[in-house]
Image 1 (spheres, rainbow, N blue to C red):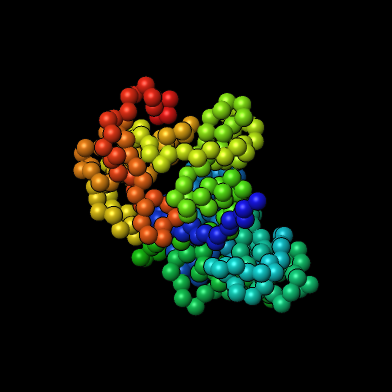
Image 2 (image 1 turned 90 degrees about the vertical axis):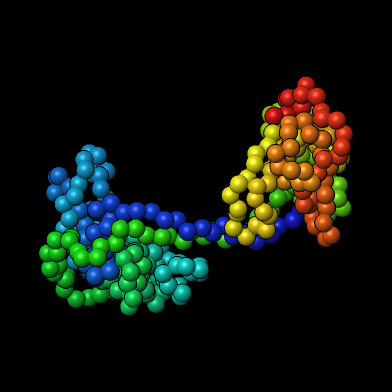
Length: 313
């Protein structure tokens, strides 16, 4: 049995969002070392603040300052901090109900070990040295045995308020394609394409999935398909992708390889973009050392009849 492949992958992107008046005031307040909540119609104070009452759906804008001290309501110990987390050493994730608030705020607690953390312990905000108007302006919470701090009664109005944020989202994980797709990828390194045939409906899936999504049965019979195929549908790309060294416009299409029961996608080259059409017969073009075709080009054959690929659109 061939080795099942695996590889580290990273999904990362900046997420930009605008802020309404409530979130703008909350984040600007953190920049100024002020913690703001919002008061509901029945007198509850919500921290972090929201723009609509989660119980009544009523719009709420009545900002109120709460104290930077509070009480841990629940916690969990983080033995191995990950990249981008608040602290680089083991810490506790805590829900803290700040003095004056009726709800709890999630953040990190800097403590020497899990034995030093308990529900009901008193804590206070440790502010970041450099603040920009983000939740990270609270560096973390720290144990505190003093009196509850008294808020100054800030109105929630600030000069140079924060109106938008950019959150950098990142996910690190190890991906394994499984038995079927590992065999498919290994075959591509020899410039051959394999699918797997469903023993029930007899459709050949490329790339293989290890099971037929229609019949729900395992697929094990390998079937070599292609290398030639037919363009079923396509689009013309006019926007250049970052870090992709392909000049626009270019064509990306679905290609039904001969013998396959569904189409896979690939770039179509070797022909002006405005001459690509449904039914065009194509073949793969490989570059030295590549594990998959660089693009597909016309074979020079007559176009395929629509009836031969209409079920693969």
